[in-house]
Image 1: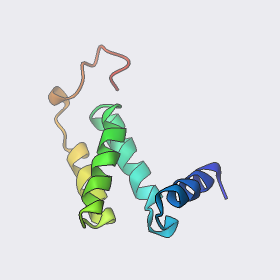
Image 2: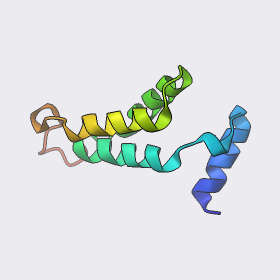
Image 3: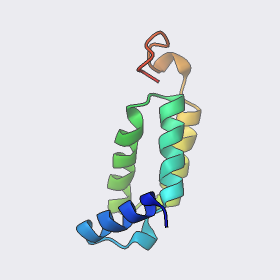
Length: 88
């Protein structure tokens, strides 16, 4: 088990969730895509929004894939100022 596995298990216990239902790789991939292709602070916000959607019944894998595709198609000109090293 990794530290991440331990953390997810502890958080799930705290929130009364089943850790088997947590798509960790999909969430990490989504966060990476948003951080690198849109804006770094967008990664945790997007993960939160994914959680809200899943809580309302969205399929986690489908929603994560759709959001990753959206991040991949995000126009560079809508992203952060490339001169700002903290923005991406």
